[in-house]
Image (cartoon, rainbow, N blue to C red; front, top):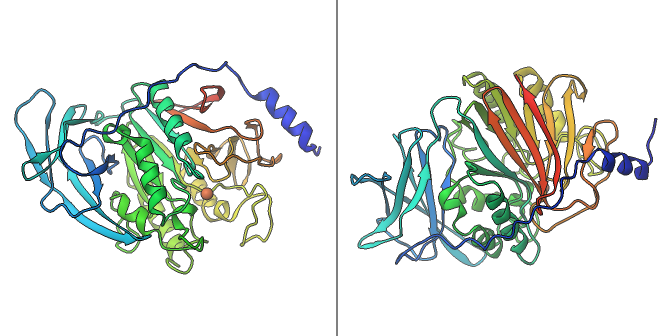
Length: 421
Ligand SMILES: [Fe+2]
């Protein structure tokens, strides 16, 4: 039976769980303590094995030679040192210097202090915590589409409220379109200023979106600033380093894919074929019971014109590129964004609604760009009301269960469900 749009939305609104508005209005987090060093955006970035290592990054607008990271187990006096590598990028009339230092050989389930040092100058001590090496439980915040128009105040408020609402969260992902324009210095600075000290204490998991590939002229461009901004786990390809990667956390193997085949067609024509080869190898090489994919564009079109299928409905070009591989590899859960709405499609297999196969969840936005997004009645099981409010996911993992919950930025519970093995 064909549903009218009004009936569909009514049906959806009846299936949406509401648990009342939470009243979390924390004081905005303060910026990281950078001491006497003129640096910004101090951040932890995920590594392949977060139980044993952490990437520490920061930026400056003047060249700071000889930076290093000092670190120690909290409560211990012995300090270790790791020299930082420096890189730079001049774009949008601004030169930024990017620093990264890989802290390796860390003990699992341990808290460390770390600080950036240059000569006699140093930041204050910041903190990182490694998870257990085994299949330990964890919680993560999954944000999509933090891109903002005119001001990043919504991203700032929503991120900080979410972190305060879920104390003890272990890391946060941003599933693409971090900023509205991949070459804009103002957008990138605003994005990090809004995050204040949070990424200095929680590891970031970035995913490249299409807006990371938009230049100042709004034409497609190479995502150079994104690639400089995040030193990501190696994927075996020097040409496509940073475009896609994987990591283990607790009982989950996370696979971060790149859906920008359209935007990068002129720059990285082998992006899909090389990625699929890597995906099959990577998926077979880990020993975790769960496999979760994070990627920006969704597997359904929702009225967005698809170059490949030349239609605006059904399975998207990205879905056609990856879904067969997800079926073959036994992927459990696929988390996407891009359309700026929350949809739970349940299991899809052979590109059709099914009782097994991966579960496909789309969420976001968490920035201030809100839209009305049409239904796909063939696939959608539940949806958020329209126009979509800012929303995010909480992913809770225990050895036998993954629980996914969507909240609005105000703390309204939209839906929660659990996958079990
Ligand atoms: Fe997008």
